[in-house]
Amino acid sequence: MDVRAAIATEAGKPLEIATVQLEGPRAFEVLVETKATGICHTDEFTLSGADPEGLFPAILGHEGAGVVVEVGDGVTSVKPGDHVIPLYTPECRQCPSCLSRKTNLCTAIRATQGQGLMPDGTSRFSLDGKPLHHYMGCSTFANFTVLPEIALAKIREDAPFDKVCYIGCGVTTGIGAVINTAGVEAGAKAIVFGLGGIGLNVIQGLRLAGADMIIGVDLNPTKKEWGERFGLTHFVNPADLEGELVPYLVDMTKKGADQIGGADYTFDCTGNVSVMRDALESSHRGWGVSVIIGVAPSGAEIATRPFQLVTGRVWKGTAFGGARGRTDVPKIVDWYMDGKIEIDPMITHTMPLQDINTGFDLMHAGESIRSVVLY
Image (cartoon, rainbow, N blue to C red; front, side, top):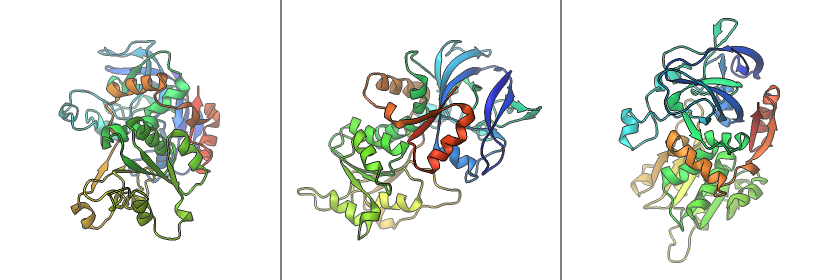
């Protein structure tokens, strides 16, 4: 079938809008009509050429929502008409990783997904007879896409596509990092580095968990108001400080009998390895947990003095907020629909597919929290 898609032809070039061909679903696959998709920094990371796993030409996009159109042989968990969110981190519930209950990093289709292919080693997309790569197993920058059954979360039908598509990455990653990865408890002190789309969702995750002190760190002063809207209690712009950032943050968190200082939990949402070090070293001696969410450039390495870890700090990483997609994503949709979390204010721009490059421009300029393409 013919579908409209935004193609990443090569690194560093704007996406090209074209009609491409999409083959129907094979066994254990599902054809989905994409209704909305967010434009995420991870898409930009790949498009820029900085992604070591980036493949071209490809149809990017991984933060979508849509409706099941057709299912292949053997599919039992969804049917035509179901509303779904594509999952770049699938949940097969059968591989050693899923069965371990220690990680959400399902390995069932990891090898082929990383090659831009479906599980049988082929692509469903093509242009003029030449295959196009899938992206993160999703390719939501097309108005129809094909995904493995295990990479779809079935959601309630009254949830608006243009809002819950954001749950396909940004919302779940931020809130999940707080609840699943860090396990933040009520009364905790926390610092969030980088108040973009992920950071704001970390903040509302901290609010949901009952954190008492939520410090946001960002070089953009306009992010103070955004952060406060979602639960921020203190804002720090490093450019305004005369001294070093880490001692300043540690001093901020000293309270009562605790004169050591440092946050119980810190979160890096920047992908900057220097900031990752600051996040670790501003966590509390003896029990501080620092979670890395941001994706660093290819070849980048993190560093700290071993003393920082020997004295009890913990460095952790998280992918998709530690969420098990088919199980957890429908619950997060419910949280949104029940008013427990906010999404609407973060959808700052919407546009048709032909204007998708404008969404990337807004991201580069720091003028958007999340742009959403509506089909």
